[in-house]
Structures are given as C-alpha cells and as structure tokens.
Image (cartoon, rainbow over all chains, first blue to last red; front, side, top):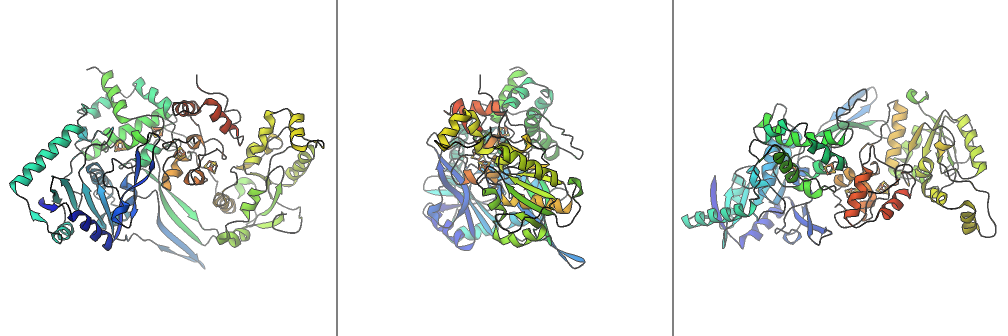
Length: 347
Length: 255
Ligand code: SF4
Ligand code: SF4
Ligand code: SF4
Ligand code: SF4
C-alpha cells in the first residue's frame, strides 16, 4: 500500500474534480427520524454541498450501485419467426464518495461472490471496475459491531481512503487512478510523524468502537444453538418484511423473472433482490415451502451471514454495520440476538 | 389461458360497476403509453366508461365495486351466469372497500345520515365473493394498471399469475423511500401486500392497506411496534378497517 498525505483544504477540490469527471454518489441527508436524528442515504450528488460527510450511517447501503434492487439482465425481441437478444452490461463511470470502512469491506465480500467465484457476474464486474471509491475514516456509528468483525479498518477495495490526522488527511492509495487524482492536488510523501499520528488516531477510533462483543467461534456456536428457543422468541417478532436484507450491504440473494411487453413482441429477464426473511423465499415448484415459519427464515439469515459464508469464503458475510438492526421495525438487532445465544451456552 | 377456462387468444371482456367510484375502471383506460396494445390484447364487448355497445357474449367479466343493494345482487348473478371467468376489480369488489365502513353503523341511521328525508333501499355492504363465486381478485384503491396488464398478459399466454406474497416495505426499498415509521408516521406497509409499487409512502403518506393483507402478516407484532411508537390500538384498528381487507384479521390489539 502506498500512503500519502493530503492537505485538509484540498479535500473539496478532490471531490469536485471527481464530480466533474463522472457521476458522483455520496451521503445525502434525506430527513430526520422520530428521535430528531438525521437520516442519510447514498444518492447521486452534483455539488460538494449536496453531501454531508459527517454522516453516521445511511439508511440503505451502497450495494445498490453494484447490485440494483431491480436490473434488466437481457431483453429479447420477437420478429417474424425469429428473435433477437440484447445483453448490456456496460456501466458508465461513477464515483462513490465518502464510504466508511465497513461498506468497502462489504464490497470485498460481494467481490468474493460476484467477481471471484465460479460464475463471475459481468453486470457486477463492470460496475465494480467503473466505480471510483473514495473512503473516509470516522468515529463509530451507534450500534455497530464492526470492531468485533475486524471491518472497522480496510486495506484494499478502494481507490483512496482518508483518515483525518489533524492538519491533513492520511491517504491510503489503492489504485493508479487514486494516486493520479491526489497528485494533482499536492499530495505529499508521509513522514514518520504522519505515521505516528495515523496510528494514534486509529487507536482512538478503535477504543470508541469497542463494545465488548466477541464473535470468536460464532460459527460453531450457531451450530450448537440450532434448536435454541431464542430463535422462536425473535421469530415471533419478525414481520417477514425483508427490510433487513434489503438495507444490508452484503445480502445479495435475488430472484430472476421474465417480463413480456404489452404488445407481446418484447421480453426481458429481470433480476430482483429478494430476501431470505420473505415468506415465499424458500417455496419450490409444487408449492412446498422449506422455511414456512418466520423463525426458520430469520434464523437462516443469521446462518448465512455468520456460518454458511464462513464455510465458503473463510469469513463472515456480515460486516457489523447494524443497518439491519436500525431498520428493523420489530427491534431485532444482531448484537442482541448473538449476545443471547452466547449467554445461553454459558459465560 | 386454459388454466382459467378461457381458450381464445383475444379474450372477450366486459367491465361492470357496482357500488364504487369507478376509479378502477378509469385505471383500465389509463397509462397511455401502452393503452393501444392493452386494448389490442383483448376484445371489449361491454365497457360503459370507454365504449358504446352492450354485448353479452363476454368470457371475462371485470366486476368493480361492492354489493350494497338487492338489484345489484340480481345483476351480479346474471353476470356470473354469463361470464366464464369473473374477476373482482379493486378493493371495493375484493373486500367491500371504503363502503364497508357503513357496516359498523346501524343501517337506518347510516341511510338517514346520507340521504336525509329521502332514504334509499340499502343492504349491508358485501364484497363480490360474498355474493357469487369469484375466480380472481385484483386488489387496490385504485388497482395498479401495471399489475392489471401483467395479469392480462398471463391470461393471454396461459401462465398462472401469482401476486407478491411479501409486504409493501420491499417496494419502498426498491424506490429508495425513507421509511415513514422511522420518521414517526403510522404505516401499515409491513402487513400489507405489495404490488402497488408503494406510491403512498413515496408521496409521504403511510400505507392505509388498500391491497389487503400480505401473506401471513404478523398483525400481533405490528400492534406492539405501533404502540411502542405511540400509536394506539384504536388508531391501528381503524386504519386496518378502512378498506375492509383485514376483515376477520383486524380483530384485536395486543395484550
Ligand atoms: S428481522 Fe426485522 S427487518 Fe428483518 S424481516 Fe424480520 S421484521 Fe423485517
Ligand atoms: S447483517 Fe446487519 S450488521 Fe451485518 S452487514 Fe448486514 S446489515 Fe450490517
Ligand atoms: S414506509 Fe411503510 S411500507 Fe415503507 S418501509 Fe416503512 S413501514 Fe414499510
Ligand atoms: S401503499 Fe398501501 S394504501 Fe398505498 S397503494 Fe399501496 S397498499 Fe394501497
């Protein structure tokens, strides 16, 4: 990794240069919640002022810019006795500005599934390659447990990642295009003092992030607790609304369906994000539902996050952002569910 | 379309209205960008709002409105007798709709309230299926034209149609709507069937449940979470009763 420092005043110019060159998406304030706190979302922005980089978290994650809620995979047109198919996965350049470490780590999880597994997705790859990512370090957000998952820091998967070290930013440079960009705005080589400041700042943030949660051995714990009454307790509250998976930066389960145009001459294959907590997620041909109860569906969401994915990809899928917990109207939060499971098997 | 008893490639349809506002019919005539192909996919035999002529050889009858008079009962039975497929169109036809609120009052008192000294013959409001057998129900106040188009295409192509089992919240996510419950409003979305594309929350209004319950709604937890946010059982019940879709489900609040 290459490190540089960037003067504080240059940040605005860097962002404006990005916005001048491509579509920009960043944290925008969209409202106020019932407790008076601001609500943010990652949305397209045209000006520096449109974005609020002091945001805590966003209601929705940035995954939608790589895996849209709905996306046309192909279209086909019927002509006399024949048909033509069109597949488009060219993505226009876009920049995601102001992502936190957990969200970049979430993209690395999605990379494992859509870029590095047996069947890479050209749709995902083209968006991922054409998206410039500028990350920023921040004080921990409420309810998050990124520290326990090691996702409060990030080492790759971005173009630039900035940590505030007082007078300047300590910039981790993850790509040539990231380097070229800040070189144009007076980036300097780091000094020993910069490094010390950076390490001290990371320690300060890490201490704030610490919430005592220890996820060591969680996959085995989940296996042991498969029949725990704790699942029934939370399952009884679950609304099967799918919101947790929709807002999660790593939930990628989807369905594919076909849609025909009203004149019956054109069709499309469409991918739509689905959720394992929705009532018909595990319905198969013939109508049998393998997960007929909210309890079984909720449980399997935790199993995919913290057990199944570990078996396939050597780390949990969850990055601890707690978006699911914040958005759940029934108040089901991962920290509470996991703590209860841990307490059940003893201290 | 043989799965619903119809064989012709261009089904002959008729549209009839009962106790309603005719808004769902109007939806059928809306959405100009696909109106021509939509009308080409079917053959209109009788549809007072957009066509002259009153043919009787229809295969599919779209019935809009609730049933609230004895002459409506008779007319509906005749339609049922002629139609091979009877579709209840809109929340009034499916659940009784807003008209159903009348049933919470004494019939004569309601009559006097509305018609004063010139009372009309009236019955307790019923949905279409409470009077004759119904083959397909398309809920919504009004119905969503996009969904109606999809259903018609499924009929023509002979592919069974399935409504979304999941609730409106999913469609809020799809269009980036910030959750109104988070902002402090009451919204029935978590227990209401999706398919409308969540226009109400997107416009700043909590869902009133015009499409009726999602599959297996967790009504008990909904009352509890609404209460925790300061909404009384009465407020929630009243809203659930508004379109009649929760009849028999809206029974009670939390312990
Ligand atoms: S856990 Fe919460 S957000 Fe997820 S489906 Fe259940 S009620 Fe909805
Ligand atoms: S499961 Fe919840 S905490 Fe984990 S990454 Fe997804 S939204 Fe964040
Ligand atoms: S606004 Fe209503 S329908 Fe939309 S997510 Fe919130 S509760 Fe669900
Ligand atoms: S959001 Fe609710 S009230 Fe509005 S159209 Fe959809 S189901 Fe009906």
